[in-house]
Image (tube, rainbow, N blue to C red):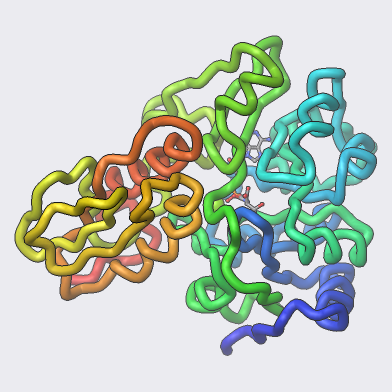
Length: 328
Ligand code: TXA
Ligand code: MG
């Protein structure tokens, strides 16, 4: 059964809020990617999220709130965390903080950790939905575990079907990459996942930030397993010349010749534009008539860090650890 996609009107948001309060799942737009939402205080709803995504239970979920006022009862905010929230919320920053047990969050959402990841999204539909629901909403990206995150309602519908009661459609997500995940449980902030808020912006506000190499041996964010964001086709990075049958994701005005097709992340070399296009273009190019997806070099600064992080994970992917069987 295909889930219902509805334009995110006021009445649709009211309906979605009613479904969420009843323990159902609703997919909704945020400024980063579409989320698969469930009542974060309801164990059954949270369990449904893990089942719908086929997500390992050791990988905790982000809990969404309208703002700092609603977040404070759920976690222990020190002055540094308050400062980060005041500066970047609502926005593409997720803060990992010590969880308050009396906050009423489902333990399952934290996957057994004594911390919780909190975010106040900026998107007006997400804000309206959170306020209409009146409860914190647990929402991972609305894709099957290990696949590319959805930046349109159609992407959501193509991967998650009978488990979702409703998909709220507000067009493509403006940022296009997931939020930055920052761990503030220790003395030095730790960047667990680069994302929509840049390391440079965080450093300006908070000073030194630890940036562990999230390699296969030491995944710091439980979800930052190496083969996330995997299309079916192999992905080749820093491509400067064509290989037979490859398509190219180009960045900047000049693209090397000889590719089966060329699509631009950004012709002007604009990292924000490239971020917004990345996931939709990866999906669009992931077709069996091509032999692989080549990507031109992307500068490792600003949003380029998050883009390169997702591309490296896509390039790491191997048939054996993908979310669905590889096409032959
Ligand atoms: O932009 C986003 O963050 C989107 C939208 C829907 O808000 N959500 C999202 O959720 O990307 P998800 O579940 O796909 O990614 C959440 C990441 C995972 O890498 C997870 O391991 C990490 O945050 N995370 C969640 N709770 C954590 C915790 N308590 N400690 C460390 N990492 C945590
Ligand atoms: Mg995800």
